[in-house]
Length: 176
Image (cartoon, rainbow, N blue to C red; front, side, top):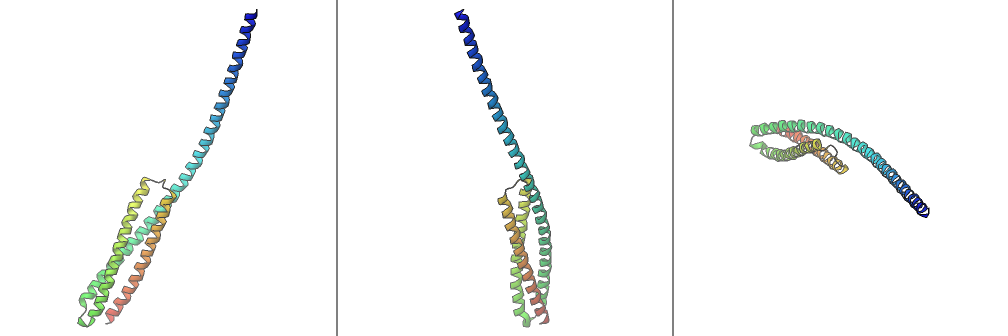
């Protein structure tokens, strides 16, 4: 009878230990489920953030494409201006040699601007390719693109200024 009671007590103790172990496992599983749920929520929030970043990058790419088209048009206009300057330069006589020298100087500046513009356009094209490969680019990439856009605007402003100066010189040269 004592052995039976001892066995019953041992079984009861084993059952109690097993119940505690089961409770502990259930609590652990619930905690893991809670952590997984939190991770899933964080992942969804991060995906939403990435999707928003992709939308912004696509907008930026479209803006850069438009800016590239404007820069290419400006490059064509600058080329036409350069051609006109070369034609006017060939028609000048010895009396207008000084003005022709100034035009040549302006032409060199325009060529430098065209080269800078072409390099910037190539950089934009390279950046567009990179953006196409990695739409989930970081905010640092966005800042770099913004800086590049500002440089292009500054180059455009300088080109317009130089073009205006060139047209003014050309008008003076043609009057002479």
